[in-house]
Length: 219
Image (cartoon, rainbow, N blue to C red; front, side, top):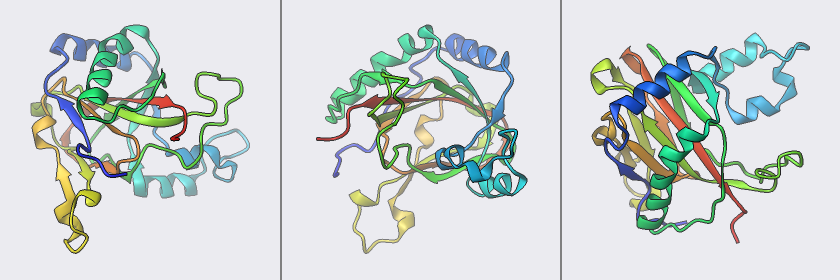
């Protein structure tokens, strides 16, 4: 799918007060190791007690290393949803979506990162017990910068926009590093099939919030 905008952002949209509230709320909960979707679904990676095997953890950390907390509080969605709707309209995507998954509060500490990936699956969700998710796909992803840029170094969000470039160019020329959306409270919305990554944090701690928004499969 060719796009005019591979992402749409609102710089410093959320106030420092709201960012602080989200961070404090996230810190009240015990974090868990961030996994990738395929690893979560593959029983071969789990022990009999349901924990990730050491070999699987080593493999996971080639791709992703961070700590997360899940949130599904209404007040958070109320703050973010208007920006999702505006980005979907103003970017010209006009994707049909009707449900947001649990928010993922993410802590990137020293040398933590998330390599190249896209958020969408290859098949719709098979969750008969969850009618808001069953049969749907991820269409719009959202990430919010919660930390002040002075509190960390590295950790930059990058997008791979090769579809927008000449395939004869080097891959590096198709990567866009989002320096201008580091300010605290910035909201970035993008189609869930767009490839992106978070580079390693080299100093301090970077907090972010991610929300995936679902709709019926493409027609």
